[in-house]
Image (cartoon, rainbow, N blue to C red; front, side, top):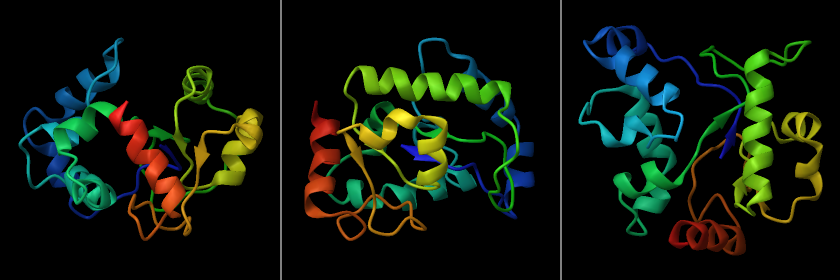
Length: 166
């Protein structure tokens, strides 16, 4: 799932100040073998990350997919991994982005379904192969990141569901 960058919520400062949250986030990022989306698997029900992911994946949970399953099967890739009020392109490529682009290319090399959510044109400039990659699905409405039947064509929603089953 290709996104722009994490947003900012008024609840963020208090949520990230809780004991263990920063450590859990850093462990998640540093896990060389990958790690499930900790917002979906940790019992912190008041964290804005859980709220955002629950809303985003609600269309899939309505189809019977659990948070635990989705946490293990969906990889969120942020163009910029830094929280901000709004996304704007910056005039250079950050070192961390080179790794992000590598991750996207690796997913393409194994024929993964890539859900191209926000800033599609920018992603296609950074990873030109996305323009001709056959396993890209895009929403009807790029401003909405919700993976739901209403935001995707029936064919694209079915491709997402099939990818979750494989």
